[in-house]
Image (cartoon, rainbow, N blue to C red; front, side, top):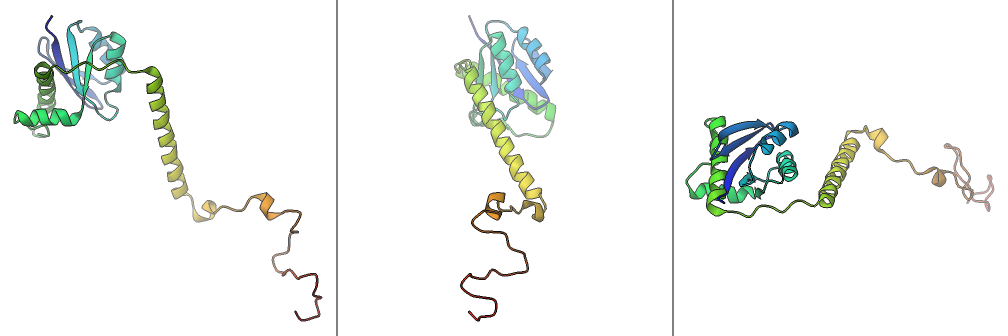
Length: 188
């Protein structure tokens, strides 16, 4: 059976698809639409896409749920492949044409190089990755809040136990402590 390598160029809002058998398409990058598109694919189809910063999550989940093989490429490998063909990967002349060219280049890369489909992701590893990302996000938010706080609020006062302990009785702010060996009238 001959595999049909489908190139998918990802963005936050859309998936630009180049399917050599079915033609080009643009699919909104939302779970319902991507799942519907993936459900229409056949068993000999292989989806080839670049690893992008979070834009590929919806596609990866849909591909995994449908049992369709997917190849997640290092963007640098795709860039070098395009460069070897004298294709400008960063051509900004016409956005829609560029996205379709990138998708066609990914389909061609898949057909020529025959990369192995990715193994199914481990759910425990995905959960751990999500927890790590959330922790990083909370740490960034904590730093932002500390930096945004007014100076008076950001100063930390000592804990209550250090301010008033039984061994050191509180003193009034205007008086000085005297040692028990000296009396008020005697010089020290």
